[in-house]
Length: 136
Image (cartoon, rainbow, N blue to C red; front, side, top):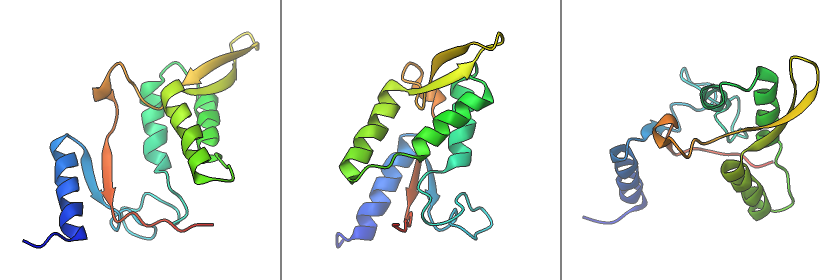
């Protein structure tokens, strides 16, 4: 058997599937498709999935706190890709700091967690192949 990029790609997808990841085709969730999960090819996050999971992982955070966390994740803009990756990694590991108003109207600080490290089964794992991204 000849080792090609498609063979390696399929082996990786099979491996992720065996670990319990949901495996999707990037073409199936591409913009304009019936099962589209992205508005355009510049969008690199599946925000509907992320928002739903944030609600599940952070039940004590009100909607405005979750919206602030999504905004912070969406707006990571640094001059280099490596710095963007560092900032995003920090958010994954340390959580996203948000500012909220409690019932008394006081401003409080809290964290929105993107991953549940204590209960890995609570997270959603997804592998997508052929995920096209347009720069700019």
